[in-house]
Length: 159
Image (cartoon, rainbow, N blue to C red; front, side, top):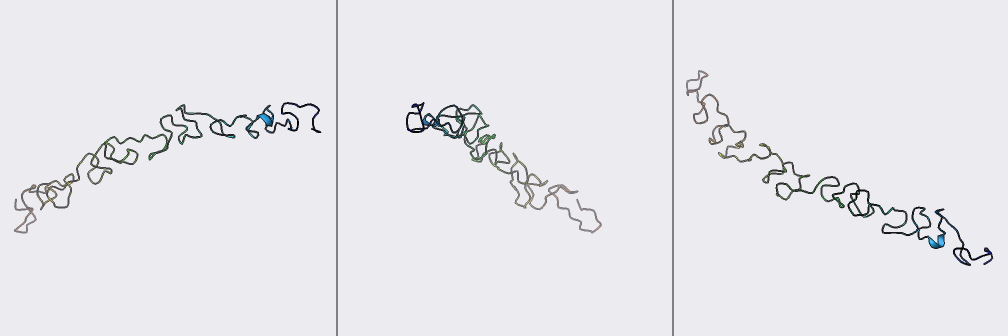
């Protein structure tokens, strides 16, 4: 070997270069461009084999490397659970009524309140003051049962 007087670390015919200046000659360094590694490890050269959140999954494989409870983003993303508290099949992060198995959005009546219209008058029971009378939605002067009729036209209901 005309470039060496002695075999050196790498032997004759192989230069003792240290491209990444990590103190390990390239002939013994699997990561010649990575000063932090001489062996590729699980994540490969140029990527640290670390687990920042301590969940047992190296960051190079962990989609949620700052969330110790998740290593995949899932539906809800990192930092949010994938729970379905009410068991309605919709994750809480997407469910506007996470504790109401019958709803995923509040609707007219809100979470935890039925959207039923018992008397079929088009007004939900939660806003229908006369939910048993399809002819009335508000009690008025005469209540829910008696019509608000003014047969003599004097401006006062007959009731």
